[in-house]
Image (cartoon, rainbow, N blue to C red):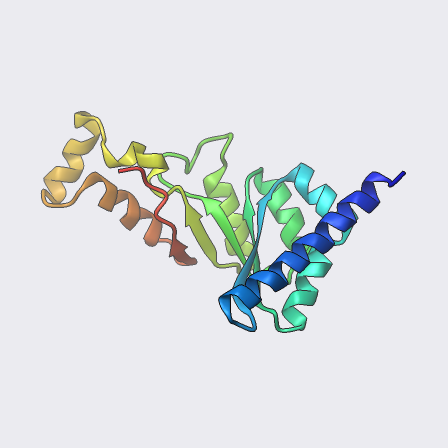
Length: 176
């Protein structure tokens, strides 16, 4: 039978074929951005083994994709390794909000600093932490209301995220 590597490579070929079908269905010759989803230590090792990053770069070189980036879900150390190994990655999608900034499991600040060190623009997911930052407890909301009574809790979260120099896109990611 087929080895796991052969199965995985066939899967990548199907993904590229699907991209071709999607280009045709959209009536365009290229997509502006290809985002390799959910990169982590485990997925990165697999994608490295399969040559997925090289396949993505080939799509850029061939003009079927203009820009290539990753969404990331792991430690700053892993992100630094990916960006060191693949400086061609043009942007990174990170979970970034003021609640996760110093969270040891999410490592928002550390991952942001890695992107900054590598000069990579950031696309933000979870700017309002799934709605958590849209309805603050009264004791957390009070100092914000004192500064700007008309501003919503969510607007403070969005302003905070947008204040970082290399944040280029903020995805809504909010439930309220």
